[in-house]
Length: 403
Image (cartoon, rainbow, N blue to C red; front, side, top):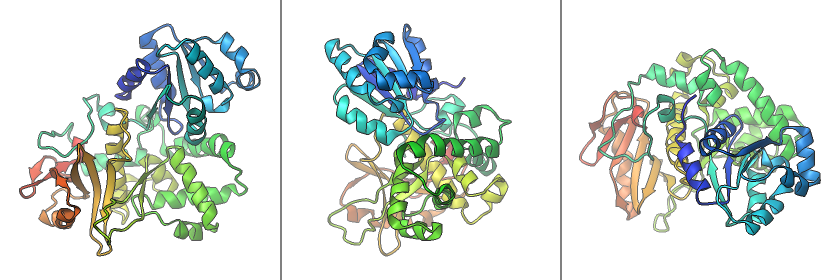
C-alpha cells in the first residue's frame, strides 16, 4: 500500500481541530487515507453511511446514532446524513477535544454548505485527489516552485509520461496494473452519475450529461466557453453552467483563473479548466492508446493537464489552497503564460511544452512580465528533457520528472 503525503496533513489537522473532513472525487482514496491515519493514532471507531440501515438511523435519529457511535469516530460518506452535523457541533461544544470526529464526503458542494452552517471554526478541511507522482515513486514531496535546486525524481520518457496520462492517478488504476481504463472508468462514470449527480440535481437526459462530460474532457487545458459546450451538446447555457459547476464542486475539474491586474486592460478574463485525472479525460475523449494520444493534435493539452494537475496535488497534499496563488496570463494579443504561482508576494512564471529540448523561443511570452509590476522569481519551462538546464539568465528548462 502506497504511503500518502496527505496523511501528514490529515494528522496535523486532527491535532488542532475537533473535526476533520476529507473531501474529493470518488475513488481518490479518502477512506483508505483516513483509515491509515486513524489506525496510527489508535482507538478510533469507523462507520460508513453506505449501509442503508445506518444511513437511515443517522438521518431519522441522529442523537441515537451518536450515542451508539462515540468519539473518536470516523464517519464515512457524511453527505448522506447532514442531519448529524448540528449534533456533532453540540458534542464538540460540550467537550471540545481535538480529533473527535473524522468525516469523508464525495459531494463536496453539499458537504461544504452543511459544514459552513454547522461546524464553522470547529473543522479542518483538506481536498484529496488521486496519487501524486511523488507518492507513486515513494519519494519526498513538497509544493512545486521553479527553483534551481530541483532534481528529477526518476528517469522519465515521453512514452512513460503518456502511459501514465492514459491510466491516470486513481489509486486502483495505479496499484492494479492489470486493470484496464475501459473497465475502471466505465464503472466510475456510472457510479458518479448514480450516486453523486442524481443526489444533487435531477438529470432528465443522462445521455446528454454523458455527452457534456465528454465535451469537457476533450477541451481540457482550454479556456472555458460554456456557450460552445452547450451548443455542441444540445443543451442551453444555463444547464451547461449548472452541470459544469457540479464537475468543479465534485473535484473532477480544476478551474484556473486568469491573472487579475488593474493596470493591464488587455488581459483575457475567461478562466481555463483542467480535468484532475487524465485517465478519466482520456476515457471520456475515447483515447485508448497512449501512442496515438502522444502523436495527436491534443497531445500538448493533455500533457499540460497532466503537469497542472500534478503541481496542484503538490500543494493540496500539504493542505494549501491553490486558488488564491495560482493563475494564468493571456492577453488579447495572444500572449499566454500557462501558470503563474504566487509565493510570498513573488510571482513564478511557468510554461509547459511537450518538447525534449525547448529553445529560448519558449520564453517569448515572458516579455509581458515586467508589465505586471510585480517581483518576479525564477521562470521555468516544464518539458520532456531528461535533465535541468538554463534557458537564459532567469529561466530554467525543467523535466516533468521534477514535479
